[in-house]
Length: 241
Image 1 (tube, rainbow, N blue to C red):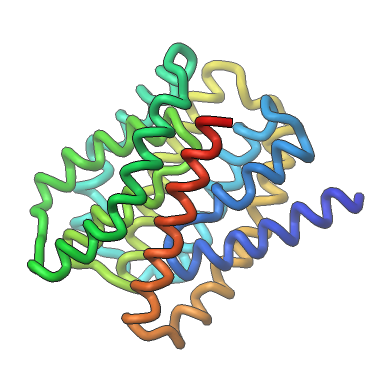
Image 2: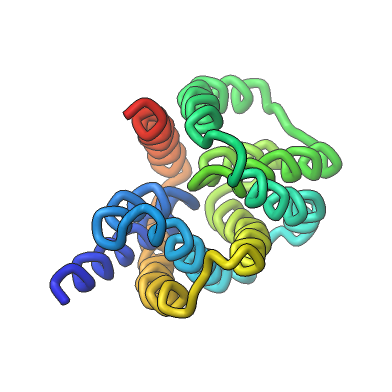
């Protein structure tokens, strides 16, 4: 019981952080779930919890969702996530984690370079990026720090950024969970455990909205850099340990 209470509190904290910067919940929760339930159970539990966490963020910021960006990102991202989940069975995840970890660290100066030059991408380019990220999301734990720069490059920020990324990630996660279900990796008890933890992440998403409402754009961007840095280091550490 103590372990479950700790996981629920961690889920609330992870959901709050993810509600503020748009990502990071899975990166915080996964090591705790591995410790509590074991690595084989942790992945599908996290998949269910992430679905509910993204539901919470999308609902909290529903009115600010950029639906053009959502559809552009999801049109190739959804089938990409399903394909990536299948590839997970044959591809060493640590290879992708090393590449993504390095990319996240490079995105800290890269994001500021693009911002200084007012770098933007078009919706058709976002669709291609969505397909690539969707595929990667089926292989590795979290690609939130990768999708966030993509939506930033479309011109989204703060509430619009968090809500649109959450809605798009939700579509990808549903595709991934459905693929896990087809492969027999989601027995009933794991679904229940994921739903309970996901509920705490949903509650955290609403707390994150209250924090975000009081946060300046400058502070938001600095928090984003910290999250990219931590995400990059976490992926590199997971790959080499």
